[in-house]
Image (cartoon, rainbow, N blue to C red; front, top):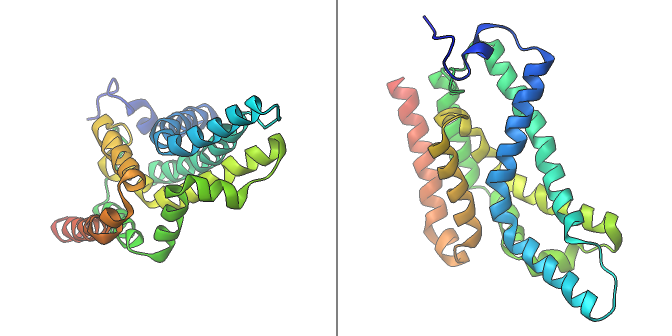
Length: 222
């Protein structure tokens, strides 16, 4: 019998209410901020430096907050989708109190999809944009506060293109598992800060193949 005092147990014992949905959405939104902001630091620092330089030259430039707001807005939208997925797993009774997918087929599928996506050109393209802050700003620059917001939104879209499959792995190790969250956060950060040759030359493929093999192992052993 499930312990009603266990974390997440209350939400496992009854269908979600609108309050439950909002609570889970806020959890995802806060978690995405904590996981994704570190990877956006290089772009944010570069933009902030441009703002300071413009101020010294007597020019006006949209504040850094507008850029960050656009970036966070994108991940706030993603959090809605993640909440809907969690609601679906909950409704299908495929989620544990620690918010781990209890179906080995689902867990295996998430691992394999994440691994395969690591090896695609779409992943590489998105990662290239995230790795080159100066080039990205030069290519996508628009004036004004709305332009800065769109710039952050655009950057967030490329980050989402890099990481959406990895975020799905939260349902494998546990949405409430702090160590698992930290591991994915570090992995995402390493993707963006390690030298291009080091990552694309081997580590990226090792990670992708490792995820695929893990997924196959879960499917076979499950």
